[in-house]
Length: 250
Length: 164
Image (cartoon, rainbow over all chains, first blue to last red; front, side, top):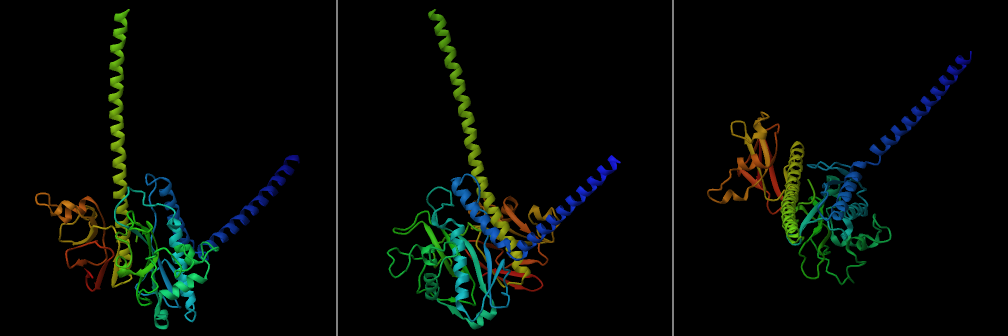
């Protein structure tokens, strides 16, 4: 009788335990699904992995660790898909609102700067000297809807947006301050060759890349850290200080 | 007493000398090991770039992209072989019908008596892949120099690749 009671209690205890475990498993599964499909961690994770590798290599003086950074392929879409392009990320925008495109570009530039240490971390980790080495943080393409509605985006528009909006990585600063260390290019004393408001506009029917890098032997009055810039893929060397692109993998 | 001290002196010197010689050998070995590690790391990095660029080319070809930009590894070459030709061992060993590789271009290849063929280069350091269609490179091989290089792709019975 005593033993039977014991078994009864044991049975009850087991069942409750099983139910609790099942509930926890189901909740965990739902949370996991949420992260997988809603937050799209693939993009976030690869940028985080890159950032971590940059920090590790700088701490190890180039003797431990190696860069693990991949180019992000961003499709800025007005509803269509980007042709001849296999994006790792897509940003949907309203074609009536140009600011949304400017935000997408500014955010991608800010991510690039953040990934590579914001100009505070030496991730080259090799002896001094050599050609300027650059990373291709992102490749950007616009879909046909945007190409038909918004033919071009001037650097002046991009600059104005950056001056008036908070950076996604540091809300205490605008994008301009975060990326270039200046609040306004008109009153800047430093030469920010990488950002030229008079450059040929961004044509939405062409491909663009966002780059940053390190120049081991910078010219006088220039910083060794090559500031983030968005340039036409074909003009990657002509319009920047970059000579070699051996930091990011395709 | 003096002799005893002198004997002790002589023995001391030999022991210390031996220690120094051993230390030099071990330090030399450590330096060699570190240098090898450093250069193998650099080689491994370029191999990763080659693999990444190769996979990117495959992806873009699958999407029938007509222009592909390649940024790295700088100085390496893109080259292709078909079945009838002698191809790198990593391809022939697997019985591939065609073979496209991104290979390290040996700097000695332009020096007489030290010439390395593209096949030799690809047998040494390369990343290769087989594609569903034959890939034909007009110029024979394409060097990844002054990046990015833009590959123009023409899709037909075989895939024609040339530098823009």
